[in-house]
Image (tube, rainbow, N blue to C red):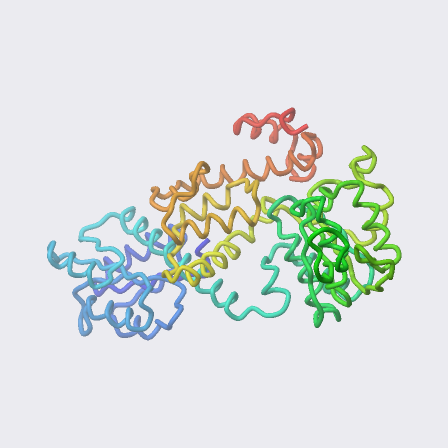
Length: 447
């Protein structure tokens, strides 16, 4: 975890310096030892990937002066001070001056390693946040709209760019909160249609009795209260894109009218017999399998086959957990700007909880948690934000939580087939059964 990070150890006592360097090296840290502050300070640059451990009493520049010089270069770089001469007032003063920790001599190897490990974890998170903020601030193109470095997101962005200029209609599948409308907007934004309107319509949000008027438009006198011509949503999207969200909620009686528009590419306003040609690309979205619904006669099969030309499947957040830090930071910065608050630093235990959470509400749920975190609110029933003040989670527990989440994900994907899960994860069935028993997972719960 800390392979690319360094510990700068400053100690003028050769025996203490050698012993401390050896303890840190045996703990797996990359150490560079100095007998004076000046050469160590020369290593420090803004964004330095590491921490400083320094004795207070040194020849030439002392540890307190070194800390001040380090903070002048990078205010968030952790500095651990060590002294055999200090007292409580010195320790308090050092901490107020920005010291990350204060270790009195004589100290054990365990004390030193523990303090350095905490400091490195803090530094790692700080650098990760700064990197994410830089990427978000300088994001361009589709990467700035569809965030994520996971393989599914890279493939999705590449597919969108390949298909953006195609004239064929698109059907997007995805669970609630996976970003179906954002994908539709990307299809529009990166096509030749971007100079014209992108019209979004939630098929489940418009009452059936006014749907035709809203979607197809009407002429004056078409019905009581129609005093002037109204251009419908489809006509408004001419030469642009029409996004039909939750198309599964469209009543069957209206599905046939929509199908006619998709086939003929013209609309007739209510109260008019004159067809109005429209050049529109239709992007539909659903959270259910429309093929299953058409087989059950809950969705018109002819409309399904008309829409089922280009199909995009959006991965749920639990299947791209590596994108969670970037997304959380993006939503947190947006919320901080909107509410005029400072963006807080995400503590390690909170990020661990975010990575282990199942995210039934997907990206939308993550955004809600990020906004609550910025506002200092609790996260509700899931209790995720209680992790901000929780004690650090032991490594074994972190690994266990992640391992359980991965096995659960594969069980869900394989509909409870232990053979398929074992093959997907590359582990023997006996090992998988042991881990499932350990985490209280039962195949029948996923069938």
